[in-house]
Length: 533
Image (tube, rainbow, N blue to C red; front, top):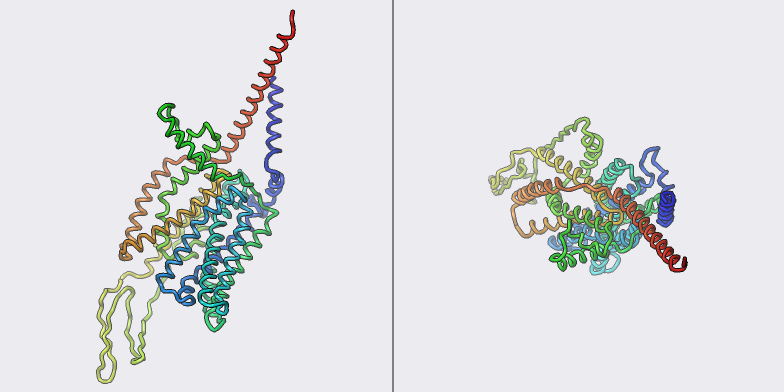
């Protein structure tokens, strides 16, 4: 019997391996293609380049958006600001939609391709709307709004999928390489942002078309980069490891949570208490699904205080160049605790500010100190205009270079916070909900923008008071999050898969034993009834 049991168990494992996704062998062969003998899959090169081009496309277009509203569509400042923030918020609320499509329906690969096509169409429509000869102002506004909506769904939809898809390319044992991939991935984001915010404004102002600033070209270049991003991503198709979607996982998760709540409400008075409230769903749903939902909910609860970081972070005008500098420093020096962090000192120089009026072209108002507020009274004395200066607000006596450490510290915070968040969201998510959890991480950015709008528009505080309020709130969030993180228990989703696969095999094996035993008992009974001695 032990030998027969072992054979049967082996057959079950073989059957399982054959009945899994038909691309298994194909995926295993793709794992062998590495970059220069390292453990980095060659496929991530296409993903990183795709992300660079896509971020160039997004930030290049966004850098001109407010100016486009003001000077081309002739909107007022309030409407331009409102539309700009609405578009930015939509770009960070749509990732959860793309994540659901990827994990439940199309898979990450197809979702990236289809939504990238939507993204390209949005850019093209936006560029056409910036051509003066195409229709009147109403047509330009309609094309611009349609283009922005398509761009928001495109960029938001692929955002959680690309990061998770890049993480999928690594083998289970190459955890450290996957962590470094997210650093490289984040560097590509900021490299695209840096170059685009420099190049696209130059294209608008230095190149003239249709008798004015060439917005059509400035928006057309990001559209071209998005087409390049799509072509690059498709070019690596033969190298990608693809995880097929596992049905409507979101509906199943919501149904499981609803059943657990309802079952607990109805039976809590009669049944003994259970360890976790989700355990009340065990009568209908598998233990594996319940455990996966617990994993996701634990992470999402951990994310509740995090929007406050983005609320404060978005108040700062940070240079993406600093991020490109700090990411390799942290990855190669700070994280391994080797070496030291060099200090970079930058100096700024003031210059005299000359004020020229039509009536007095040679009038020199002298040095206007940074941060000061002045009232000038111009009086004519002996045929010449003489300025009399009154200081309303005293000038700052702190050099502007003192802001450099603050910028550096906030940039370090972004490097530590954002890259770690991407990797954490991937590593702590079940295989069938990795895009969903990436979307949850990006939702913290969206809610951070909402907090900024509420405080900035509703509170009406002076700027220094507003900054102080955000700093105090973030200090409180830091304390709360530290306590929450202390009690968080890390989970290895891949180890969980192995455990439940073994348990599933064991349950099937035990079920077969019981079935055989039952059939033997029946056979003996029948033999007893049919044989008379």
